[in-house]
Length: 136
Image 1: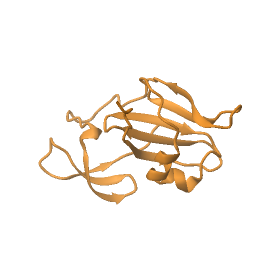
Image 2: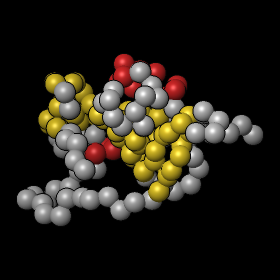
Image 3: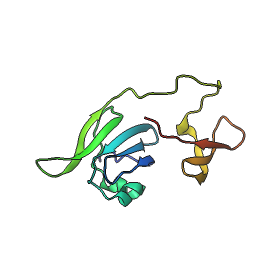
Image 4: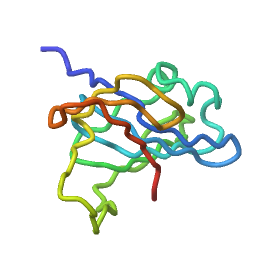
């Protein structure tokens, strides 16, 4: 039986050619992972373009993790995942409305601008606007 090749979708990229770059990716439409890539490993344009980034990344490590780092192995020169961890991530602690929306159930209808989309959601009878913001 062939190994499972994960479906990887780039959700957010913060690319810095002089420093480390940070990414939020979605694996198999179910798992969100945060990846930091050390400076100088890949070209900035490649990291901003999902198909290029996915093709350049080393294979995803197995196991239950949500944060990873891609580095160059100092002995071999190979690019690899140098660290992965299961980390408690901060979340929203105070809500102003009782309705909660799982962002993985949103379906993009149209991109309106950077990180702002017209979306459809199974629980709503109309189209809504969603803004995705990057937080630590």
